[in-house]
Structures are given as C-alpha cells and as structure tokens.
Image 1 (tube, helix red, strand yellow):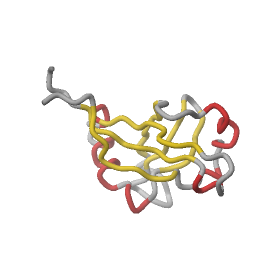
Image 2: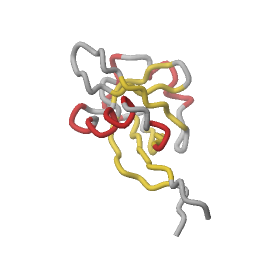
Image 3: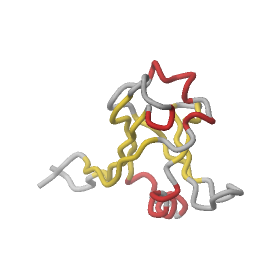
Image 4: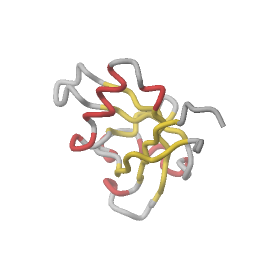
Length: 110
C-alpha cells in the first residue's frame, strides 16, 4: 500500500545553540521542510549532516545517528529522504528546542 513517507529517525538538533537556529526559532513550525546537507569535509566528523531551513544553518544530525543519512546523501540518494520539524519547544534547553523527523519517501505509485 502506498504511503507518502515513513519516518525512519527522529532527534533533537545537535549544536542548535551554536548555529543560527535561535534567529529563526519563532518561524519554525511542525511539518516544515528542513534540508539535509552532507559535509564530508567537516574536520570534526566526516559523516556530518547539517540541517538548514532555507539558507539558515540550524545545526546537525547527532553524530550517533548520522551514518546512514550521510552515506545516502554522499552517494546522491538524498532525494529519497525528507526532513521535517516534528516539535518546537521554545522554553526548553537549546539542545532540546527543535525535534526533527527524517522520512523515506515512497516512490511507488498509488
């Protein structure tokens, strides 16, 4: 049976407090699309996957959860994935303010 997408992972944005997420926190809403960008040249983690809302860097997929996403994006299969905001909690600690879900798109037809 066709499904638009299925969630394969969920996490709070790593490093949210160190990037520009706070500048757009009030604009983030559940369901918003977030871009996944592999950073194989990242000096701290060659499997790093950055999270962007338009041109604003929000932070990263946590290192403990980035291997598969990094591999897919690096080899050009990132289009099968979509990331969306699941939850926004402005009053939480910065590292738990925004929860992201990663979904695999269903390429089958209805």
